[in-house]
Image (spheres, rainbow, N blue to C red):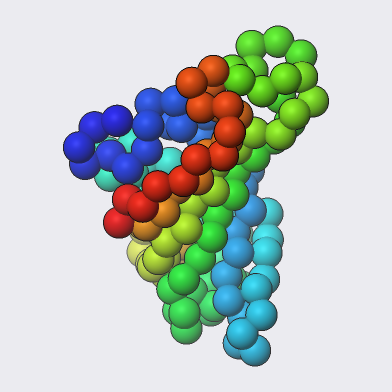
Length: 143
């Protein structure tokens, strides 16, 4: 892990291999709202950028504008081989808790996405079953 990078090398490798995550925001009535989303990992500053078609018109974007507290989970089930510490069929992943910014006029994550982004700045990271030296869930404050 680099001094300005909140993620370990193992976590970065795992995150870069995943196409989808789940974003949890706080809705207008105070209840959590969870949605699957596409994302881009910024290796330079250790943030997560979430995009989508017409993102600025979505409830998740409005939720972040009203309350920046979010959680983001990237997870999967370990394949038969080469899965680090996880046994085949066992879950593994990274949970990121932090503050999000709703940004506009940004570089598009994908060709058909709008120019709005939700950028997550991690405050706490919890990872599990990513490598042999991290077989159990372990969390740490980073922000």
